[in-house]
Length: 132
Image (tube, rainbow, N blue to C red; front, side):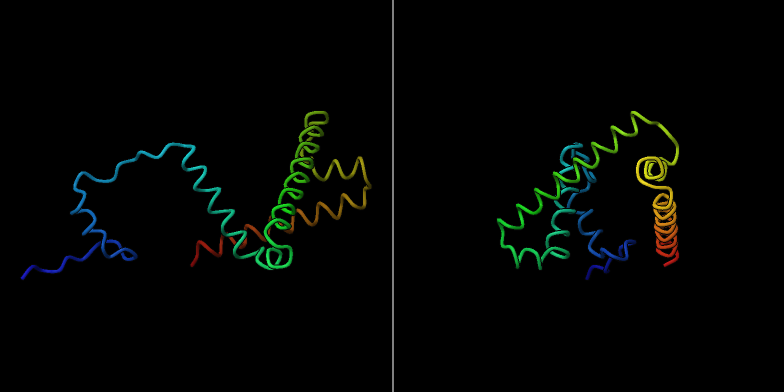
């Protein structure tokens, strides 16, 4: 009777069986564009099934697709505008400075506090993930 093998991988106990089936090891044959599309499909799939299910139910498939296209065009326009501003007026702390110059100093203070709060919260969440 063969002795059972224990894998060194906790989360995948059948890793030794896979290693026996393919003794030459894993082949790294994925190209950059394949990894890119795997990532895009993962992001889109998670977004549609978890956060936009209600919108999909309310608007239907064509309405949700139209909404995604509209939001995508708006996001592209905003990024084009920000990139043009950065090229014309290169400055450190660009988002706060653009609001201060083109909108209002009080709004710039609010944007700066909100940006600092979000960055601090992100770093707090990232550090708490590394602890667990």
